[in-house]
Length: 533
Ligand code: GLN
Image (cartoon, rainbow, N blue to C red; front, side, top):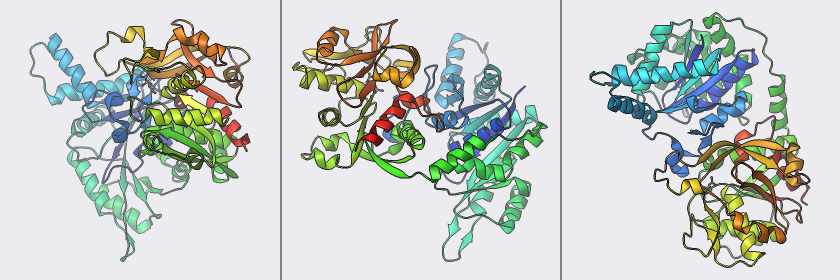
């Protein structure tokens, strides 16, 4: 049977709870335990797939096609495990399943209530993750802040788990803030005391506090927190602001949080294997040069909307010992720009990521055209691939009125069109082509050279596809279709071999990149950008 670590948050949001949960999971894994992670999001959307990225950041996609919160990206990157549909549970998912069961008659005449029906459903999701993963330890993060109305049923379910499983099988970590007051020059514990009181009012006693603080706390503060919050002093952990987030697991390791958890669980404290992580921290701290990569998208005002893409660029940068300076280019603004040379003056590589809808499309096409005409290394992802095809068809093949039916349903040449099995779909949520699909690579291409295997599995999130009717015209003019999904005959990768580095994929490589193992497409893109003088 698994042991359970629950991570809650107090005082304010944005304390880095996701990184804390990931860091603790990493430490437990480094001590030889099989870990699995899960996030509860209290909002009513069934998943974040239908939400605007400007509000919620990127939608992370698991291999099994679940559209999830971006924290799952942190989890996968830190613990290097593939998560799945049991890893992201929203209130919407819980309510939907309870209401479906009620309509089906499964409750046999009972009055369906928050407690026990909703809470049982939540508990089942924790146990399901534990059973299906076979993990020794499941780490569950609860989104939002203690005290929010929305998270109360989740916390009630966890209280019940604490009661049912006992303290040798459950461990609650509460993440809080210790603010520093300038003038009196003090760190303050009161917000943490209040937030722990809120948690205890819900029947949950935290086993440890992780205190986000601008400066290290001291004995006096720890004594105070220990006494007021009924938490042993050594279980009060500092989480001091850092420049390099990869340091966080090591900072927690120094304060023995993983040992404390394992001891409470009665599990052996095996030696921690962290050398690979220490090496990563050192690399990140000592990057020699920097290169500018332009990321051209319409959600650039919120960098989190492209979180995994930005992280993947950095991962490849670690390998080539370069810091990546991202030039965040707003594609809509670019449409009004006369002087592209100015925008891309210091740019060594151009990346056009995924996106939906018609806003900013022409700006992205302008950036792709600039990359192609100036032989600047280019990587297109999903919509970025579709637009690279449109740009080439328009400007190299001379096809007129060529577009995607997503933004121009009546265009004469729909080179990007709705997939056949998408035509009858009316519901928007969860109905894209999602998750892992196979792609066969063509020998002697850039793609093959990057991966060095015949077949790959990559994660998808799209509704439109390349229209094979136009394939031969584009091939005649030099475009190579280097990756194909053979089963459905779908184009997965295109490239232009007459240029130094021009490649784009229909899938999303950014979901599989790891800090110590950059994704092959990002790897070669950054290598080419670094070599681009
Ligand atoms: N909007 C495009 C489609 O649905 C591309 C999606 C994406 O970039 N994720 O096919």
